[in-house]
Length: 343
Ligand code: KG4
Image (cartoon, rainbow, N blue to C red):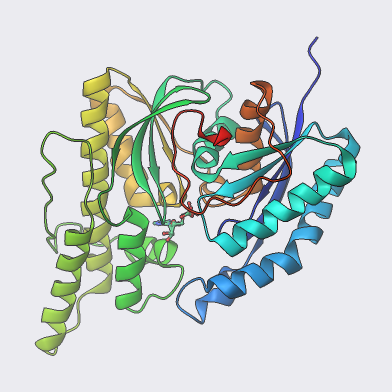
């Protein structure tokens, strides 16, 4: 029988300090998340400098707790996996430095992980049977792309946003209509039961590509709000949120189905913070039925940033021999691509 592999995953790319122990890339043994979201709410978004300082406070207790919950000592861990990009540079450096400190002190190997790869791997933690190849729609605050996951570390980007990410298009409009931060979950809640046909938004045409564009849609939403306000009226928040999220979901589904038809791959996963969105999940549930797709999306707690997804991604890098030196630096603009954890 093969020896079990335990990976400690550390995540600090934005406003969550998170650490987790995962067994064999699939089984969560412990999962600790210290979120700063409530703190940043007063500023209407993440303040990078403050986020870094809060990671400094939280990183050691979070790691200590994750090891204690797993009932493991650092010496029993096979590798420390850490997010080294993309993300806020100061925030990334805190998790990365902590990981390097652990590795330097214990001799445990270091494995740098692409945060976006982590989001894809959140699906492996929820679905034992899920294996590549599959298509993955990665939708977060900073990214929107359709990825062909050909193998655990072999990815091809089929389409991407040419401007804003879907999460950004949601967060910005949520702020303008006064829902506050974090906008995604608040808009999701505000739109429940609303009329999805009441408001119309710009349509985008990206030719034959699988690319997205959300900035024109965001502008058309802003125009609708401003025109209403100029007339001394307020938009109906429930119907507006429902219509807007439904519109975004339709676009995300449409391109993903186009990718299914182009590749012939009928296994589809969702990943990233926006994959928690109930309008998106509902639209994909419907599309999966219509197009006979195998559909996967992570459970809610694993859609947003967490250490378990980093540990899972780290496992697949570790077993194919990836090791990083203690000179690994943060890569705030790191892209998803073939074998890019080595870059
Ligand atoms: O993946 P993530 O946690 O962080 C990165 O951007 O990497 O994604 C954060 C994004 C934010 O835009 C947030 O508003 C959005 O995910 N989000 C949601 C929901 N939960 C989080 N968007 C729509 N509906 C949700 N339920």
